[in-house]
Length: 308
Ligand SMILES: CCC(=O)Oc1c(C)cccc1C(=O)O
Ligand SMILES: [Ca+2]
Ligand SMILES: [Zn+2]
Image 1 (cartoon, rainbow, N blue to C red):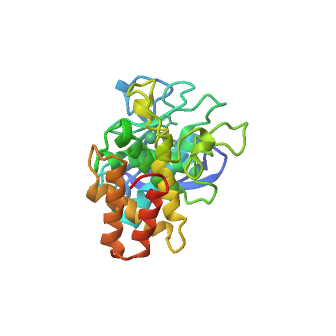
Image 2 (image 1 turned 60 degrees about the vertical axis):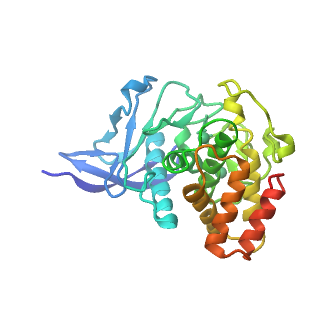
């Protein structure tokens, strides 16, 4: 008998109920969404990347109790839908590539990343992080790394790397669509501390990150230096985006269209902050006209962080 679409239900990392597409085959259900080409696997706490993607998650009754798996699967679906609906992009490659997520990678692993082929989520150590797929902005951030890789392919070091991080933060938060200071990872970071986050786009300084070129951190291009501070200097383009989207007359959707067009039409692997400024001004000009509110606002947004 052939496999058929089914609807699974279960609780996410934070105990919230949700439903999602699964596949039923020979009496077993699988975390496979055939309409969006999503598959969710478990590494069963192995940290061996050679064993990835691991085991396709299955269940006997289609009621799922693995919160990390439920969230990786449902949030990947939301990210897929956002790119399809807002930009008519079919998956990260624009051509319906399978979105594979593996949860329970390693032990106490405080990390989430795109490894060039799939997403990988740790469970966290329970004090710094809870399972990292439990935040939509994180899943959006990771899948956007894949979109970036298949478009501008910004090199992950120095200013191009900080742009890579910033575009992933921007899209991750646009997808999460909350009004709380443009925080990153707030849902899965330090469960015993409320109000903090991995990063803040509206107030990078609150996490020690720069919000202006005057405070650009010249860190070494090494692992210890976070490849020239890609997660730190991202505060500057992040702040530029918040300046832009918070200008009166600018909508989140239009701001996202400008950023997406800049990334996919104008930016390249070695683009720096000045190139990003020029790309977003050109994108705003293409979309809204040279004398539009958007062009004025994006120009001012970069000027306010010392770019241009
Ligand atoms: C917002 C998501 C994020 O930053 O994930 C990372 C974590 C938690 C550790 C190291 C790298 C990353 C990343 O994806 O850049
Ligand atoms: Ca957020
Ligand atoms: Zn990242």
